[in-house]
Length: 99
Image (cartoon, rainbow, N blue to C red):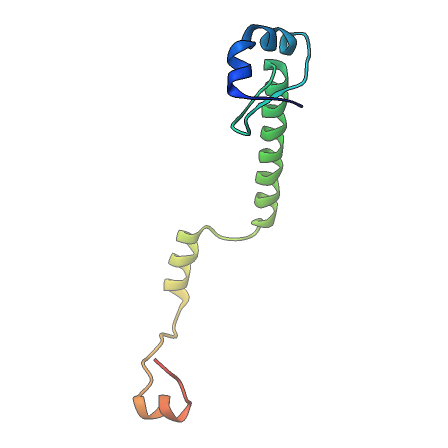
């Protein structure tokens, strides 16, 4: 990757763009930005999209058989016969529970 300063880029912008159009390496400008050809950018975006799709497929596979939150919440309300009840302070002390 070619590295240039902002000043060098401004002085040689046309030449830099022509090199990129001819298949030249991307140009790093003062660790601020990278200038690359449109075809390289499209390839980079395609790779990023494929990685996103793979991550989505993996997340979907991991969630197979699980219920969406709202369904699970409704189901727990209809089947839950046990409700939490507060512990009396004396019992909490006996169990050494802190609030």
